Image (cartoon, helix red, strand yellow):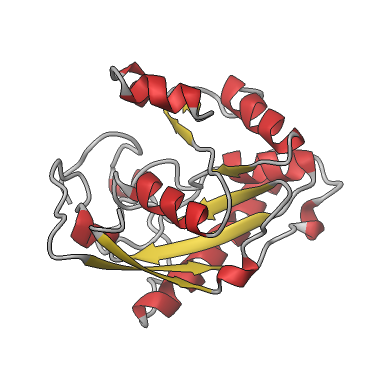
Length: 225
């Protein structure tokens, strides 16, 4: 990764060096987990991901994912009370960090802005009383475009990673973790991620966050922009 990428990590001091937390970045390339995993490693933490279950069925890769403590998530499964969330919570109990992509899949937004979020990240954070650390990155699309099968290693790519202030979601604690609470808390997280990406890109995101359902799109699988 150091041969392929020059990292520009901004506000790394906001990244917790100890204790449990949920790390919540934006998601627009299939190589994002590797890019952000290395960023977390450079900041002194071993990352654990909630990753799509199909990756665990790939020979060698699946073995490595399981041995390194990654968490399989089967698409279409319920987040509430699911095994992946239980596994993430167990890691939290051990004081480890868990990377959860709130969007749940690569963004459908044509310009790669964060789309509507899902509630898995805030559920783990609220149930365990730990912060969510939002983050945004930009430049990964030059390394591997959305839905591409090719990685462009040379010339070396410049990827900016910006860490946000930890969100404790205090206003939602003590409330029933129903759909309304989780949706509202997720919106706070997605707003924070979007602001970070705006600062990196030096432009404003659309006023309305992309909603695949409103554009007759499925939220999983490849699609044509």
